[in-house]
Structure formats: C-alpha cells, structure tokens
Amino acid sequence: VLRDYRRLCVSGEHYPALIPMAGCEVDGVIYRDISLSAWQRLDRFEGRMYTREDEPVEIAPGEIITASVYVLHADYRHCLDDREWDFDLFLRSGKQKFRNAYLGYDEI
Image: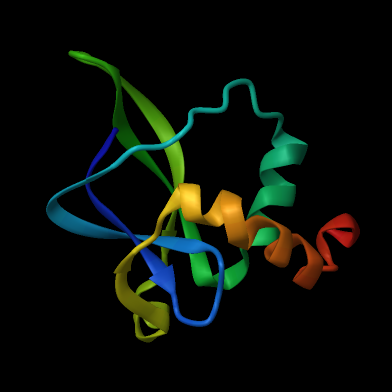
C-alpha cells in the first residue's frame, strides 16, 4: 500500500498516473532486484511525464519498505481525469489496446 497518493486515469489513455494526495492510498505490486539497466530502460519508457521517487510502502501490517514509484510530474496534471484508474478494467479491456498502440518499447 502506498499511502497519501491517488492513482487516476490519464485522459484518452489506458494507463494511470500517481499523484500525491493526503488521505488516499494505492494498492500495487512490488518488483525486487531490478537491475540498473532495467531502471534506465523503465525511466526512458516513462519519459518526462513521470519522475521516479522513493516512497515508503506497507507490504504487510506494520512492515514498511522503501520502493521506487513513478509519479506524474506536476507539469502534466492537466492530462488527468478525476476518475480512479481500475486495474481489473485495464486487464479486461485496456491492456491489449495499450500494447497494440505502443510500438516503441522494444526500441528503448
């Protein structure tokens, strides 16, 4: 659980954005042992729209670790909907559309 953040829809896109918001929380997935080259590739993939930040996350009741998260850069707030992004909906209808639309990942 990432506390004091909210995950919103990006207008016209299938992917989300995290923004700081007191009192909100976001469930997510922790990936461990990410190599430096993988981080560099992820940073290029996320681009200027996101910044990578280290934040405390709760992985079990009372167990906090620091994790890197991609947070929407303030200059791009105008790109957000006020709708919560739904992971299950993404898996059902957005993931394949995203993969089909994004052709540059292999080049990164």
